[in-house]
Image (cartoon, rainbow, N blue to C red; front, side, top):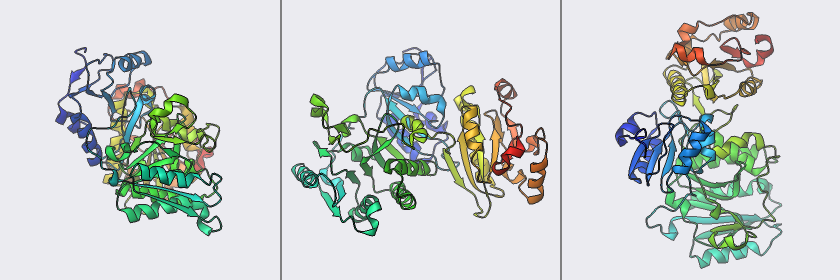
Length: 478
């Protein structure tokens, strides 16, 4: 290993990062499972076995390729700023193991980790009775023998299970699956694994419970979550995910199930330290995949499953999910203000690919800290990272009358920034009629520059001249 990749003291690694309690605990566990932790310098190969490699700085594709090729199969990559699209290329070269979402100023980032081989079972004893295995089906289910066969497979593996049929004439038939899952989750008082009735369970699916995550699922290459195999732990974040999914399903009963689950996951991961594990291919293999079936834990009937096609209505918002992050205009961090009657505001950090990831992370931390200190007249903060001008346009085109504050990675919001933003009726009128070259707000009172040279280096489009904009008045403001 090149000396440029240096060992980092474990406690120092934790103290130097802005992580929440859940994120810090999981990072500590990941580090303890390996011989030692190192920080990648952005250039060196790391061939030493059994390392936890902390990646906080992006690099060119050739250097990332060299890192991945040199990485030992028992080592892992940890990205503390997993919300930043600058790490997408690195993630695309690895198997995703897990992510932990953002929660307020104490945990404004998404922790991500993965490796060069599929996620494997951690060592230890994992009793079969620690998880309830459930499935449900409508009485009109076309493969009538499958639920009974699935029940026999559970019995053969000595797994506790509940399989329930639902009459299609009941009013709740559109939401029968999520209603059933929540009901069983409440009754069981133990982790729950949902398996579609058309699936075949070949081995004990013990990996999700062994990982200790809140939620586990299989994800297609397109980034789409597969709703046929879902694990929910007995934790508050898992219950919040179930409730959000149920609420969206009731509100949009005709929308695709995977899309609604994806949106529920997105909402929760931006507000809670929801820990998600991404299951390997062995947990969702096609029943017609030939000799590879011998390694399968769960197999699906290919006649009943859509292969995560990207031409669906969900394709655009799911693209980033293959890399375990949110995509503009989705917010990777959502915080509630002190007043529910105020305005929502989106803080948009643009040009993030043109800047070092640690500068972007510092801008994120400053915005979250400022809103936590004084939310001013705003009821909710949504923080969005934008890589391209098209991302900025997507955020600005949401015509909901809310406010947008455009910032750059070189800018840090002052602690009283949100209380200084003009949102009274008189101030709003001034913004509406001001020339587009007008600054409107005193930038010195709102921002401070972390590094003036950094700000000068960023290449801005100049499309949005003002920092503070109102979405509904976009045409009058640019």
